[in-house]
Image 1 (cartoon, rainbow, N blue to C red):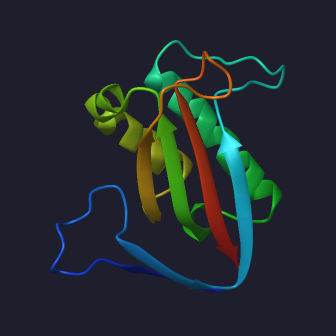
Image 2 (image 1 turned 180 degrees about the horizontal axis):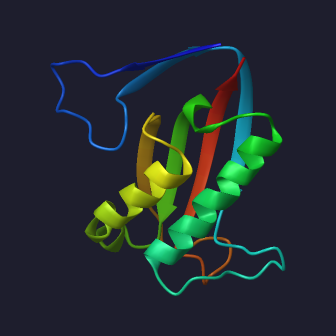
Length: 131
């Protein structure tokens, strides 16, 4: 398996993501994860708490498939309030580094009007490449 992060000098320096990822290996598609606990209840009062649970859920699914943070090639984050998300970027980045590491995939943040569960503030999905 190879995962190569590509960040051309002609583009603005990426912070917390890579502009492109070239990968070869087995592909794992990770379903969108929210801050659902094991009982199926959204937990966490704000974006920081919900992001930690949602990202933890994504990583649990990835680990169950045999992968780790460095295997993530693409992550999409859906937020009901992108302004609030960006206001907490430093805290969210610290959570990312603790749960995933410092190998950043290609990432997209999408603002949405609501998610499947109307109390969810964020949903995270991903694609990983395993050896």
